[in-house]
Image (cartoon, rainbow, N blue to C red; front, side, top):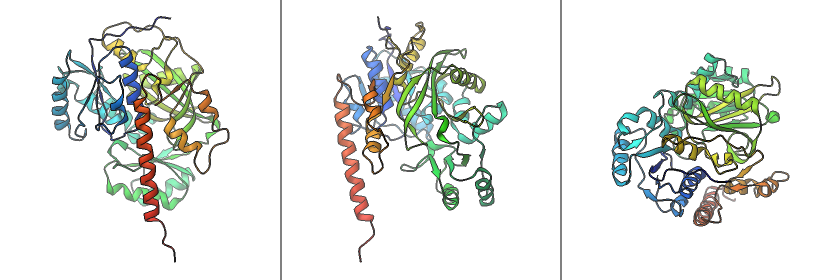
Amino acid sequence: MAAVRLDSGLPVLLLRTDHNLFHHGTLGVVRSLGRAGVPVHAVLEGRRNPVSRSRHLHRAHPWAPPAQRPSALLGHLRMIGERIPGGPALLLPMDDAGAIFAAEYADALAPRFAVPPQDPDVPRRVADKARLLAACEEHDVPAPQARVPATPDDVHDAVKALDLPIIAKWARPWLLPRGLRSTTLVHDAADVHRLFASAADHDAGPLVLQRRIPPDGGDWFFQGYFDSAGACLYGGVGRKHLAHPPQAGHTVAGEWVDNPELYEHAVHIVRTLGCRGLVDLDFRRDTGTGDYRLLDFNPRIGAQFRLFTDARGLDLARVLHLDQSGRGVPSARPAIGRNLLVENHYLRQALGPRPRTGALRPLRAADELAWYAGDDLRPFLAMGRQSALRAAERLRAARRDGPSRP
């Protein structure tokens, strides 16, 4: 079956604003577009980032100022744009802060960069957990029951109303200091109060408290690409078999499933909230009501997008490139049952103190690994080295900070 040809005359710049050496989605885009002959550039932390070792990366560029300093980031990107031949380059944000910045400063980014058309306010509205909650209430989109406390008394009332354990998430996680979790499953009321009090230490608030939906109905996600008219040109529904951290994190082992009900539900939500371009939505099915409840809405490509690679190699990064280069997007040929595994997070769970029963099954079932690729081994090896260094650092810190012996 012939692969879809991309326009090698449209280069791409990947923009990631959060420091994350293990962002496998960035590597996935580099490999997908690079293998198709597209010159892929990326803003990276330097050679210590495993993605910089990929043979499919055309060029790495210096790390950028944060999106919270838009003038500085604009200047930095314009400088990079001057170094990319054959421009304007297609700008592809890899995180929420980058997607918000690209939408709000699309005019200023031209003519160096092409940015898919987007309502400037929409990415911020859907990425902010508190604003998303308000939008769900306004448009009758099923979501977990939630509170946004303003005082300690509100926290007390929310814990009583929502029951423990409770899901606590920061409304603007892209503003969290490094090392802090955006979402936490909290089992103790005192810990909820401590989280609420810590809002004074950063700008990622307010704290959103959600009722925990039991995992019986499973965790699900939808990824798609919507053109300038709001039509879904390509999309798929995935089922999470493993997540990191468990029950409150991103996909570690996922499967492309045939679920027309959730597909149509997700498309309706995206159109209702007015988002275009690439999207990544998370759901949990409430077995009590049968509803798929929206947990998160990310207005950008999802890190596990390679799960949705169809029978001729089409994926969301390639669909974006086809549409933005003016080429037609062919109908998808879904590879239902396809599995993707993120090795580094999988091994932490499989080899941890309490490994899951049957933990090796996802590894055997994987059709694609996030890091390992026979034609591009160096990122996998570099990831292994970086993981070993981090594990050694954690061990030294645990020994240094452990309780002293009498």
